Image (cartoon, rainbow, N blue to C red; front, side, top):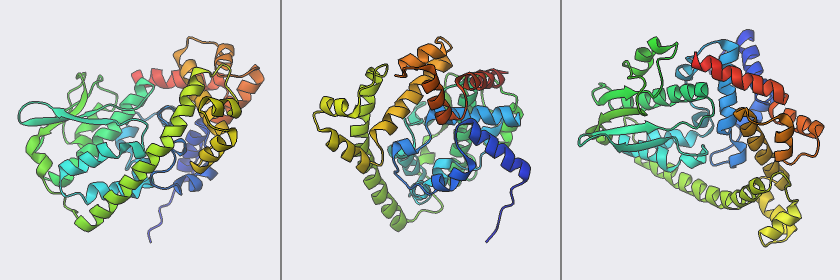
Length: 341
């Protein structure tokens, strides 16, 4: 078994990045143990992922991080995605699975396939992001992953007609030919790869009908369970966000849902969460959104998220992010500015 050595500097950078988004290094083993189709609140939101990108930019000064990431955290965590792609019969089915089962690891699907013309398709990227820098980093990562996937089937690189990016050339523009195989078109209307339609029928080199069928069955079960889970949690989140300045307690929420408080607590527990956990996630999401807009004071954000006092809001915000609101705003604005340079 090969053991990868991690330098003290790399470890320090990693620890600093995680601390910037409220995660402790000691928690990583527990995070990595989570399984395919896990609870949505167990996964990293787009807001948190964006904060991670900004912290990485600030600490390393390297704008090309999206190209350098070897594999997705979702793929590393959910090995079943690899089976759905690698063992699919052809490239079209592999891409189709990414679209069909994206809900198992993402808030919203980041890919779509549309007609470019009679003979070509466009795989369009719609990254979940908050800041301009987060968008560039996420597009870089997704674009490299798609190019690698297409190359598995189209190993002679004959099918990709063009790569288009909807932003100006970033500081690392000279690296795109190395990682994407060609110079992309910048300032395009969309982030997309245009490829010949017939490439979709190319067989995947590791196609395996037995393992593929097993992976499909497991993925469908996980997706069905997730829809059930999101049904109740989605209802609670919607009602909370509508009344977040004065959030109802669990008993009032249960009454709004026409069930008893005990039933609500039991059903949420069966889904691996609790009422207070859902409430805290709603408060954090809205607080970060309002602070990022720059249009609200911390006092106003505290009131809008249901906190009766500033000290209580400060304690909760530090617990969520590992930073004070002022430090978080400073890091967020600095990430936006650096990413735009």
